[in-house]
Image (cartoon, rainbow, N blue to C red; front, side):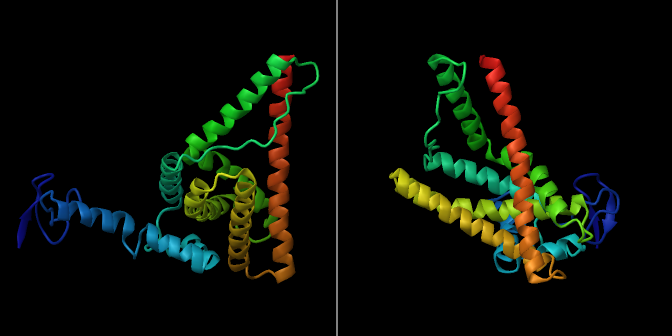
Length: 257
């Protein structure tokens, strides 16, 4: 049966136009069509967010290894995955009115008077608020740092830096799912001490998932070596954070001196 392409008017036989590649089956826009696009583009169990999320919580290291090795049909693309989930988290955090609790930011900085100290505190809060309100961008901004840390820790694993970018993109998505699941609890709890405990529980969960992912992905290593390399990843990440904090702190002191 010959079909006329609705995109380029080329006459062709088969399921796709041999000139522009458009599908022969172009349905009218309707609620059924829109739901079909949502189901197959985002939620489809074979190659959507639900499938990828399920894999990251049941066999994380193995599923990421499959993607890196080229078995990618069923998996949602890593950068799109973290961007969609991070955007969802930001929207839900705004909806649940999740605030930022800064325990005790001191204004007693040498050679800075009280007014300037308050300005420093406000600047720090503004940075926190920007990170929270732009969580998707923040996640992507910090992705290279996480990737560098794991790359240095597992540098003998034959995984190059770009593969570690893919790994940490999925880890960021995994971590964001945990954050999303905890949002209702943060919205219900108002006690700062309880919130602090909840943050600790949340952190233990995502770090445990991250460690489990490393165990599965780098399974050629022995258990004790994997534990050492996982801890080394956090050490490298901590060093990067310290460097950024020192540079930022020096910049603030110089600016307000």
